[in-house]
Length: 417
Image (cartoon, rainbow, N blue to C red; front, side):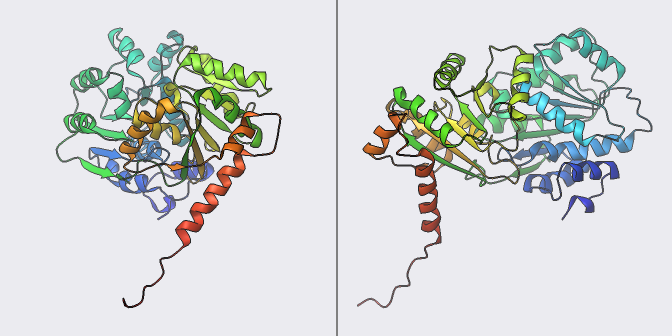
């Protein structure tokens, strides 16, 4: 079924066509009808599968149809998210899909001057995409009023729980005086998330869970290499030089590590950008824009940004450090292979990180494919000036072997003798 066949406004259909959305993804196909009916929805789906459009399309359509003019008398929908990057990313999707409609959207984040934000809200908006901190500041100042809100969206709810926003969510729910619809979206699920989800949606909520046995999207091929901690910079250098035209996101554990890795790459004449929580919001936005536009093809990031990067043409994700929390692995590798694109994620695992790897594999319910590196190949990669071995060749060889392995059919056995 194509979007053209959906009972949504012509303006939204044109916007979907313009940005290349022809057919709904699985999560969109299963979510949109229920959201259009006004039902509560609890959806668990892999990152990069189109969750934002799954709720943005029906919500924009409903608000557009209900309005008689472009004037916005009050906020109709609040989308709560855990990070500033994610708020800006989701706000951008809403803005694109709402073009030529009566719907006004706005992303509210901390770390920037609030006076322009206050003016924007007072001028009238329909959809507010926000992080809890700045929203509560403006609620207490009397700028944000919730009396007209009839839809609450909790996106990346697992991360909201990690960051301790559960009380904020409950507070907002209590302040919504009108009968309202609650949409709960998350990429990962555990006991705590289930408890939070069931406490926030009606008992009749539609429950959607896609690929629960494998939280990593099928469009992402992911591997692990065993590399000692002190050798990782040489492997990263070789990989980037093997793929000079590819967009690469490198994930590290801390902001200090991000700057150190960037300096190490600079010493071997590899330009890179860094993004982490110590940077001002404007700096972080500038870094994302430069990376998106291809001004620099290597971006080194901490987990604060793992869920706020929605760039369709990221070719590779490198886990320079393995994440401490297993679910972060899913969000990191989900920065590649987004939408209809394919992607590759490679993790560098040192001896001291094998416990982290075990936890990740337990979370995934499967082992991650290992790319074996012979002693000579390992030594050649450390000897950076020599070009005897290409790290990309090792990856390509392993992927080729996997494909042949999958194609091989078991031989039919004859009668036992």
